[in-house]
Image 1: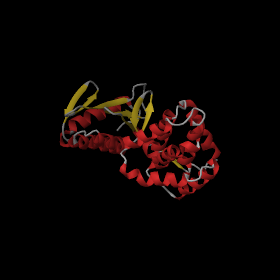
Image 2 (image 1 turned 180 degrees about the vertical axis):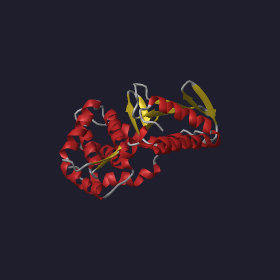
Image 3 (image 1 turned 60 degrees about the vertical axis):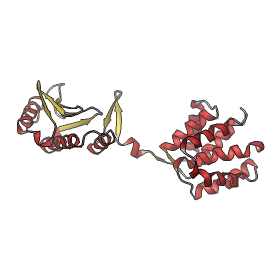
Image 4 (image 1 turned 90 degrees about the vertical axis):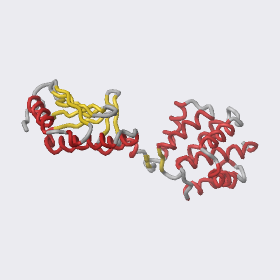
Length: 259
């Protein structure tokens, strides 16, 4: 790979920068890589690319990765991929962006995705639990149940609504409903959050039916559906006692615990 030292430096630099940082552990890795590959000047070449990275856009960095990868032989590409994974894992942390970078590297280097994942898992296993998988913030916001996205808390649900630019007054109305349900029913209600609606379900139903209210999100209002009734509101102050009473009555009909 001596003739492709510049291309190797490009690929390893892009790999190291996948998490947006270049720290001491990764700096120490460069000397080890240079010794292992017996390519004098590799470490300094990588550092030079890293020092220039700020002038490249994300698209330009991706183009650099693909153009560099194309210069390697089929025999050398798996070796380059393995070196790149070592660079990514050098700081003892792997992030969501770095996992994405592994898959991009695999595509650029013509490594089948199943082999790429196997190689990544092998190197993770070699670290014997010393690797921190830093993706919790992305995973904790939602789960997939039966193919449907469900947000795990009001905070994550509200975050999603904000990111989708859902009207502020409707978010406030939904928050009012959420807080009322939590305060009124306490441990006897399960509030589910999905991208398009909230559901209120009793935790101790008398039969299989347990959802006592759907709160659907429309573009300019939210809609309550309960016991055959439909009520629409636009603002928090429109969440009237008559609606609350109707929802509570239906809860009492479905739940073994009465409010």
